[in-house]
Image (cartoon, rainbow, N blue to C red; front, side, top):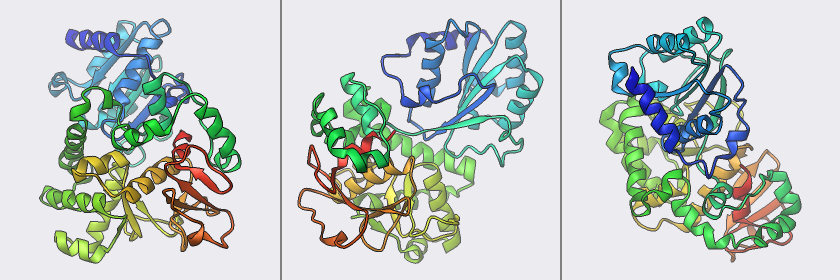
Length: 397
């Protein structure tokens, strides 16, 4: 057991706290049970280690453990908790809970039997607390961590601090908001790099191997997490990888579900379930014409990769710029807004605002005579009228 305490101390001491994610201030850290889920590689482990390091005076008797450590192959989480609490422990951060059998039941027991202990746990995007064997939905406060927004990326690489803005604030005040940011840095000098390299926080570790590492992450998601947590047949993983390549190279990808399912060799409903799981685990984003009552058996109208960095990693060549622009906009906007596919234009936001995404040659032709219609335009520093810089939509989280 001593090795767990030693590893915890080393990890907490070595984590860099020079940059922290925006969600750090949103989490109610005083809650007794906190869950943080998100895709592999977005920084969940770093987040909890940073919290422990920043608050070591508030929580002097804290411990970080990862449930994929070999120690847990022959010991139970409950036995660790019992020892930890009896020796004065007050805060436990548990990483990779989905790797531990019956994790939800043991965490429920810990919550009920050790009221003096606070617990923070992290896990896959596919983590279910409502449908797990032990329902934690009434006990746990859940948060979702996604990859870096363009705003967070700029803070990371420049040290500058920028406020989060809402979608409505951008529509109403995009000229003044752009001016305030341009006075401090040149966003276009960083934007293309972010689109290719800035989504995952490990981009600065070994830049030359960044896309190779993303491919490793995708392989782990497809080959381990999906079969483990959603029961996907491993025989179809290679076909799903081929499908991701097609999506990454498309302009964007308009789904023909019948042909795709036939190509992969599974029935239509199973294939739709697989697409739903890929969206859950944050590899793709499914876009529908109607956001009401969407189920995993409903056919999507368009399919995007979840973030633009995936396109550069999967395709292996420079992907279609139109696809990249739309992928960026869709990911940034959908964190706090509803997005559907309109009859005219690229995206309908909150059932009200029509958005067309494009470069400097994009005109109002496609959205002419449409109310509440805007162009998210790439390669401009500052907008005018209904033309808004595309990069500014990266400041919404």
